[in-house]
Image (cartoon, rainbow, N blue to C red):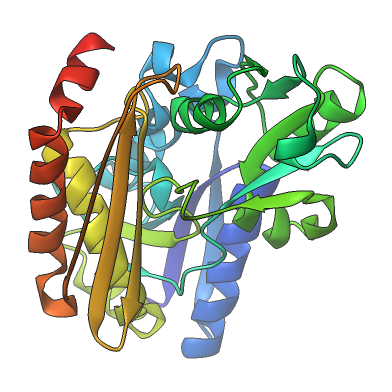
Length: 305
């Protein structure tokens, strides 16, 4: 077995934290394994002056990482699962996911105001159509402005007064030791996260038996079950970040409970669906919930985008 492993990663602080976390886990599982980080600047990192939905979506954060593996320049890529499209590049597999961290969104408010207490007209920053639609559904009197950049850049813009509040992923803040910046955790039943939010995924070449064997001890079966259910909804709907889709699955005593919503960007119309099934049927459950969303009018909402 190859005792040298090259991990492709973006250069952001959060991406490097995740890659180094996986590196440490691999060292624990395989003492003596030599690991190199291959740091890559992706197109999504380079284009910061336009909303993600306008420039191709979150897939821009991983195409170069996937190319590095397919070209033999890296053996493994570490991804935030919510950035991984439901359909991956041919020749690659996502064999393992780590235990899920906090899946929810965080409101970070400059003055410490909760969402319900933000003054009318307050400027809230987010680059996500999903977050924008849920925000406006709850607070249509707020002014939602686009916000791009890494976690530290977004927090700096908030602290400089460019925004009154911003919305980020709890997991990213907590992984970077910034959990104390969270003013309020936005969570069900009124607010759902993105598919697979809070999950780190490990991607490699399908024909690379050595790497697939190396990452096997890191795989968390329970997290893969909920990830499969959530990604199944996104796959059936062919949802990218241009679609305001929120979905959240929980595994409880062997059963998966799944809830999802598709909304218009202005938050004025929403279609909800939910279901429950044994964990072994997670993919079929996601397909069924997606079908219910379409029956309820989600297809019409997506056609209008």
